Length: 137
Image (cartoon, rainbow, N blue to C red):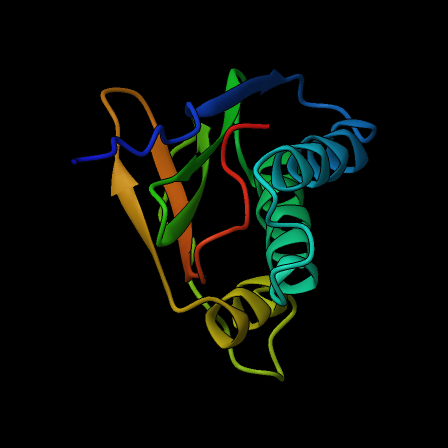
């Protein structure tokens, strides 16, 4: 008998370009990880720190509108932060006056990168994770 595993839907939220959006993005990610039974999967602290760093970068360097997406396919969690600002974020060395947030993202995530959108960019990071106990909550 074949059982179909129902995967959680993509979670998406729009955040305004204001300081309180960074902790709101963190809470959104934490609630999503909990809802997907991933909060105790061992990497939630790393994921939440990366969400905070990407949201902070979008706040400081992006242009509205901005969106945060969380995707989980049962084996891979992807965090995306979309904004309509120009430029390509990059990791700066430790002596630079910025870019340390992306240095953290690069160190904690399994992969990260920047993609183009019709207007702006999407900065993303991915985390491989063990299957959660229950995806249907």
